[in-house]
Image 1 (tube, one colour):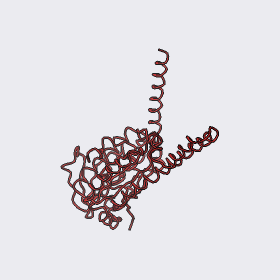
Image 2 (image 1 turned 60 degrees about the vertical axis):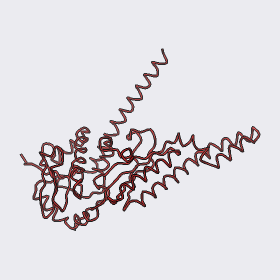
Image 3 (image 1 turned 90 degrees about the vertical axis):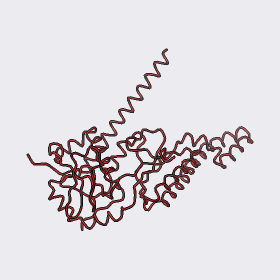
Image 4 (image 1 turned 135 degrees about the vertical axis):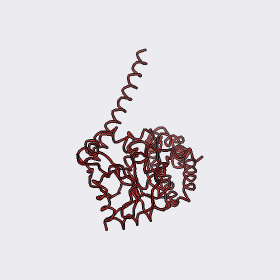
Length: 71
Length: 263
């Protein structure tokens, strides 16, 4: 039963991964530092990318619908 | 040519094995100041401050490297307690990493002690509000009572009561989500050493149609992980009728339960 509950890493979205590897309170910084602003940009990029995928999906649906209606 | 840089994945106070890590050819375990670090030599062409910044604007690049970061730490973690480093933590040289370790050694030891024998699991609760709305008559006595009153009322009064019913349903849905969500959270807290509530991930990024209502990281004693998982299975059954669904993932590197401070 447990196997059903656990979803292993291949199913984990990139958002969830980034949320962990970038955004947590691990204060460690190396010699080379990525600023918070740069990290924020990653999220903006991710959002834009996924939103455009979503928009495309919606558009496709609309097209399918209108095709069906004209038939 | 500025020489190679050191990309750090994780650190521990005991020797770390790499033999069971897949695609480990480029990785190595450094011993510095009594600590062991899993590192990779990387090129400034990709990881200098300027180039790293450029690459951070390249989502496919980030995805490959972030997934690799988690995978490698996860595989090392199977046999050892490790402090995971943030993705993209780069040092100029082994000496520089050694200095860092020396400065933070007290905190590193303290953190390793805190995370030993525990695992980080993420638990997310989603609610399908449409389903909950459909079930509300069965769940809420107040809604049932009001429905009965509507049936027994003259048309004018029934009209007003129907408007009241819309408001009442909304209120009841919120209340039930609150109560059931809290009850799930209380159970997670009881089974965990520590919990951390995380931001809700936006719906458009979650690839799901229902709404995330709770996002928790649980820090659990290894001996209680099975108990946690079966409790979640039970909660899932118990609250299915209110439209709840729960997603569990883990064990994660303990990113949420680490705090490194300079001595």
